[in-house]
Amino acid sequence: MTPKGMDPMNLAELVDPTHAEDVKLVRAREELRAALAPVRREGCSIGLVPTMGCLHEGHLSLLRAARAECDVVVMSLFVNPTQFGPGEDFERYPRDEERDLRLAAETGADFVWAPPVEEIYPDGFATHVEVDGSLTDVLCGDPSRRGPEHFRGVTTVVAKLFNAVQPDVAYFGQKDAQQAVVIRRMVRDLDFRVRIEVLPIVREADGLAMSSRNAYLDPRARQQATALSRALGIAKETAVAAGIDAALEAARAELRAAGVEPEYLEARDAEDLTPVAELSDRPVLVAVAAQVGGARLIDNVLLKPSTNEH
Ligand code: AMP
Image (cartoon, rainbow, N blue to C red; front, top):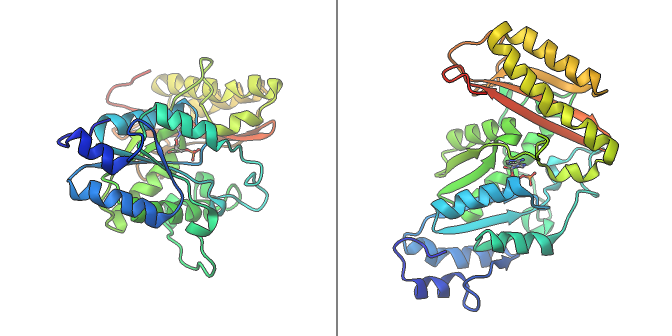
């Protein structure tokens, strides 16, 4: 974990005066800024991995990429209340800070920034960052589904994380495909000086996309939940041979057979999320969301016309 171009002794002092191999837990934004200022002055690159904790292999894949590419790795750990709707699971969202710290340390994070809610949203907080229009009023942003407030909560907190950490690179998962598209747009529109990396979905052996919310699934629902990735796999195979409508129909049939009623199952342009009816030379996102047992699950697959990868 020695930053490129830095004397290891020097870095050990900057990163953690006591245990260079351990992750340093920081609560206060000013403490984080103070710790990162000398790192930045030395010309070291900073990678940020935003998370809501309850880490799994999906999060760890982002941390590993950050570790491989950046001199200093910061993981934020914050269950962001403003991206949960009134009826959603903010209160019961799984939290295990001790385990998260251990996994972050093992994966090579240098800092875990775990602010209390008041640090992010002080009394009188009144400013929001919102990407509006077609990127956030579809799929999870559709008012009849999760709602645009969800993305307003995401972009507001991510903008604050970017301001506090000022990362050179920030890592997100393709699992939350719409979130990644929305964040890229925010970064472009507001001139954030950060490169956004979006990494592939990490799955369980049976195909289920890893998610902290999988913890809500009882054994029956856990079995049922495998229908999402199966349906997407079928959609991908069918699309090449029979087109998008047939692909969505085949996927819907697979979900139906498993007793899963999708909240949405749609094909969208992967970059601007406009509806697509036919394959073209642009990548297509097939995205699904469904309530399965106690968990609202999302998953997606990319159809890449140039390679026709399976
Ligand atoms: P969360 O803690 O759920 O907010 O997720 C933090 C980051 O991890 C987000 O960028 C997610 O897209 C990403 N992520 C979550 N699950 C996965 C997964 N199965 N594979 C890859 N990245 C993931």
